[in-house]
Amino acid sequence: AALTDSCDGYLARRLGAETPLGTFLDPLADKILVGGALGCLWWRGIVAGWVIMIILARDVVVTGLRTLTIRQGRLIKTTWIAKAKTVAQFVWIYAIFAWLLAETAGTGAFIGMVLWWLMTLATAGVVALTVYTGVDYVVKWMQSSWVHFFATGCGVGYTPFMPGTAASALTVIVLWFMPVLPVWLSGACLLLLTGAAVWAAGVVARQVGAPDPSIVVIDEVV
Image (cartoon, rainbow, N blue to C red; front, top):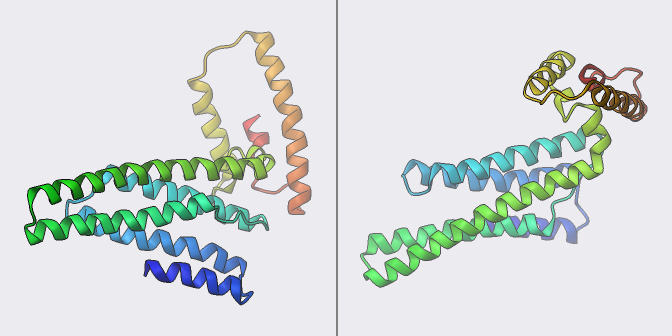
């Protein structure tokens, strides 16, 4: 299944059959494939749960951001480092298989120890690559969509139910834990935030083509 992943991408490019849907579904299929295998290994008590949680959290965030960019009529393509991460995950799973086979076959203690260390190093490498590619994608998404990110209240505006109320509630929670600022500094920050909010809301409204789009919640935040 892992080998077919490279084949379908090659054929799509070679035949000129790339589509936005295919570009979105291809990495999603990788995530389902890896997640299914890791779920089975976790169920058997072979892979730690925290490792899987890091991988799944990264995949959920990235898939969500990719969905948002598609809704905005754009698409951030998968980078080579993200593809390397996927390959590393496949190799890592095969390293686990090799260790399990060695344990089952009763090979010598030295071979078992070497395979165990290889599996451990592969686990560390995969976790590092997963975190790095997740942060890299979020940064690139914010760079390409920072106005949307700001106007939607850090993405809260995409909440399906009562986005304005959700933005207001989260703002109250954040302010509750913020230190108290001098009145003059609070007023200056509020003026700057208001001006930036008016500008960003206008930009997004023009892009969306609606006078008051529901996804714009920065006014509730202010």
